[in-house]
Image (tube, rainbow, N blue to C red):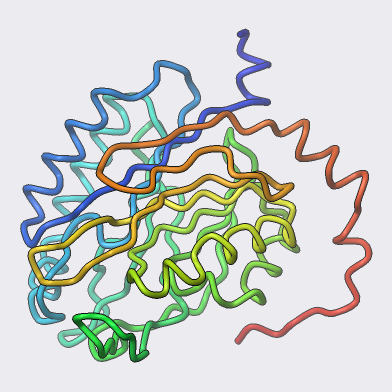
Length: 279
């Protein structure tokens, strides 16, 4: 495959993790995964929500937030070392002494931080699982900006987990030209079993984008259980790759020519009659 062809069919990887309470352990696990990546370039690697630390409490996450710059520097070096683009799932970025953003950072293969999206929709819900009550807003500050960024993979739109339930955000990403939408996640088991795959397929179909969802999986040290099923969905709604359980990664080649054909044949954006106001 020559360079022109590779730019039309870039490789995308979604990493499935079972992150622990210890940020250094999670970084070590990531470094091991990166050594086993496909050899093709350009390569986009997507990590799950809370990949850096899966804490017992927001107080513990705040402690990591104060040290987040050292981990961002490590990620930058890893991108240069492996010649990859990296979406770092979410990392806690300080907002003030009591709250942090759930920040989704995108690094290029030069190690530069090219985009940051702060999770807009916060998970304040009651779920029939061992945790039961989730109040993300107690320690997380909601973001307010929609983020789409140019890349060798087409235009990348950034979201996080619970955002998946809000079609208005995805429609705005599509309106701004997104070709690939990332959904780093840590879905609960009950909501994952009920809604994970249908929501991801729906978002891909309605936006005519590739949707890449890297997920947390398993029983974590903090007692939470996450659903896994990392998945990559085509703009036509086809499942291209999926990892139901365990840790590891999945990959696919994004066919940007096929994406454009789908949009030419069914020009949904030009047919759109509703423009939602997000914020």
